[in-house]
Amino acid sequence: MPRPVPTEAQVRIDLAAAYRLAAQRGWDDTIYTHLSASVPGEPGSYLINPFGARFDEISASSLVKVNRHGEVVDGSGRSVNPTGFTIHGAVHAARPDAACVIHLHTPWGVALSMRPEGLLPTSQFAMRLHGRLGRHAYEGLALGEAEQRRLVANLGALDGLILDNHGTLTVGRSVAEAWMLMYLLERAAQAQLAAMAAGPGLRVVPEEIAALTYRQWVGDGSEIDGDLEWPALLRGLDRSSPGYKD
Image (cartoon, rainbow, N blue to C red; front, side, top):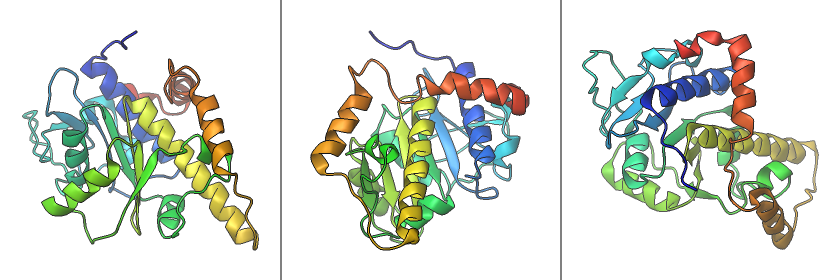
């Protein structure tokens, strides 16, 4: 059964919530990095944070509407970081199914991006992401069109990327899905890197067991990541940071 198309107002609330939830977990990088969402019914239009605002300051009404080049199109005159939207714009344009794109520079995500083996099936967090992540080599600041094409090609139809020596990226069919995938990636990275730091030896689950575990998580496919978790997360946010809906 097709999922109902959300309204722009609903997407604004979800995206603002995603920013606040990210801030609560220390995923922000002062005023840098972004979470973006496509505007329902307006192909080529996206919502993003205003430049200079912290994640914990974002509200539904403060989000800025831009085109795929990061140019403001809502007439507000507010500023955004156009270079910061470079990766997001390329991914949104190549993946119309990507209703939300999250790119972060978290300590665990950046640390994982430095490891040559990448994410291993060492925890249930990681196995929920089994076969869903790609990698993109570091080429400097991702501003050029040639690198954008390579990044999009490395993402393909996957749900995320480890950006070598840079950070992490996830995409989702909803804000909730993209946020939950980033949460899982963060927890998986933290667990793996903590185990590596504890001493030699790492128990890695065999490929066939990792694949089985992922299939068990997916079930019949009627639910996507975030469907169950997002309402609970919003209830908590309503108590701790209610201004996100404004």
